[in-house]
Length: 600
Image 1 (cartoon, helix red, strand yellow):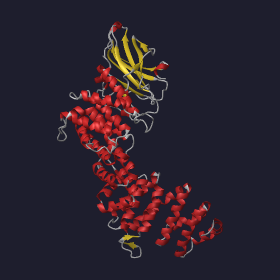
Image 2 (cartoon, one colour):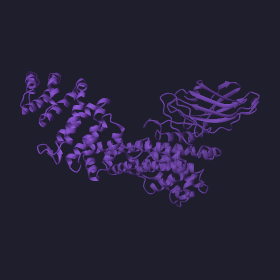
Image 3 (cartoon, helix red, strand yellow):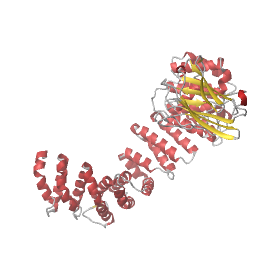
């Protein structure tokens, strides 16, 4: 109740009472000092000499309030925190005496010696050990003893266990100590963990994710998926993200990884982050041996239920890519289902007309239908009719796609199989500068892709796979008249760039490279690679050959597609490798002379 002025006037008297022989007065003086420090923090140093002797107290009441005082001082002053770290061994001895002492009726609560003091000491140790290696090391053993020796059949034991867990997770504890906690948390009775989860759901979730490792990932994910299914909506987004990260890091197999992510999308698809869809699509694409299994699982997952939009988006993309595997019944991991081409198209058309489907989802479905025109044999006419209908859609994005797909059928049908071919195995590249050049699957086709942040303006959805669909499918109507350039000329090798722009999507530039060879010998095993700054997206299609004939008697052609949504000046780094005259040749070059018409 005292004012700050009263605290200043009486702080000296309080400090004297900390040294009195009366234990009751020392206890009250310590509590009073806590309140003085809270109101006048600059008086903290006045109590420093008296606090050094307080931890030698035998009286539990005085000891308890002394720990409270030390905690207050450490929380309010970094200098005090550094000063009191030398008391860690003394605190460890006090805690050890408490857990190893026999029955004491004066301090016993449900068979545990002074749980209130134990909890206070654990909290102080947590503060002292945070971000300090030496202090953390000094308390590792006692924390392990408390965690393993505390009786958890009563609430008082669970309270001590909870504080112990928080301390172990906050300090720089040994990895083995954290691993032992995984067993502690996982193998205690369901009732105890349920109580812990009910009282502290977010901390329980964070603890569970911190304890996941390669040895316990299956069991921990089972519990976390159960938590995801039953938790309050406010926890679902964080829980889903945590499961994605843990599964990516510790997945014991690709099938388990895919099943886990699909379970999340089925359970809480509406709560997942925007990057969940492209990340799962990349995982599926790179799991070649799982394509038939995955497309069958996803097909069954969305039958009649389009409520989980991310799940429907992934399913639509997967059906578009691997619909031929679905109808052929090639699944070996589970019993294959019998499904016809028309039944597959029925599902995708249902997605298109469903009131639950967002514009992004409809875009996935329409593109999937278009892809199936190169994978199905009996329903191409039906696909043409569907695409034609959506050419007059009130959804501008959907209409644009349909118009371009119609043009592909009518004017560029010879290009359709190549443009809609199956996605190659991909690598994700994330850099702060220009993207690294990557070779995909050891072949000459190179896809330089980046994970973009949510809501970056690319419609529908700023996602890697959507970028791919735009690059593959939105470049059928071209405007020419852009001057060509020579991008490279050295040692008889010449690389020319010619340009085309899409009328319907001017952010896409199509570059055709022509490689010629003026020397007297062929250049063999030719590979062209390219990278662009992170604000662009780039895709290389397969080259026409890997041999550049001598004497300029022929050329290699290859198509590059660049998505430039911000209309920034185009820059490119190229890498050339080939064999010539018995030697392996390699060179890097910068291309900065792109004509303005190619990017403005």
